[in-house]
Length: 187
Image (cartoon, rainbow, N blue to C red; front, side):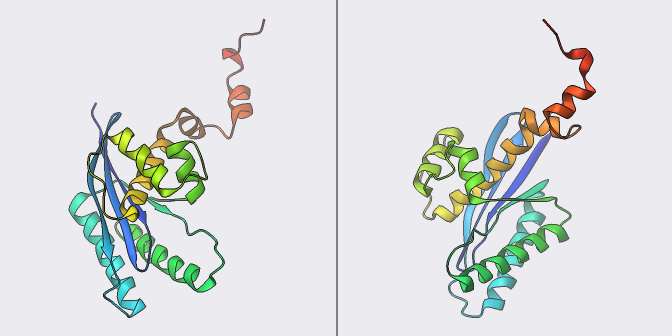
């Protein structure tokens, strides 16, 4: 049975929010949409937050994603920036929840490791790997859009790996072994 799913990936920001929609048909991956929402024209932070909510709601309405994955804010030195980013993320999550989407949050390190194998990869390395994996021809204007695509692809990898499937019924490998002793071959 061919079960098509769409993952909405979000790279939250109060100046630029990246978003991407990744369609999954069995193991076939296709980019549906990848872009940014520019918020710099609006000086009022509350207007920016409203625009984020409206955009996420619009994407859910138009594309009917089945899941939302969002990048968690990293803890930097500038507390004000972190608070603003947290608000942007919260508003995007609220819009996704209002749209009845399950939301999963991933750390920047987890996303980078999932895409490149290196949790300390830079934006260019992530982009180059996305380009190879998804056969993307043209380079987007903003890395925020490719970061959002990386979030969506990370979610796909995390929910479709062998360990992810194991976690659906088992806590860890020792739990699996305990519940499947008949499958163990002892030599």
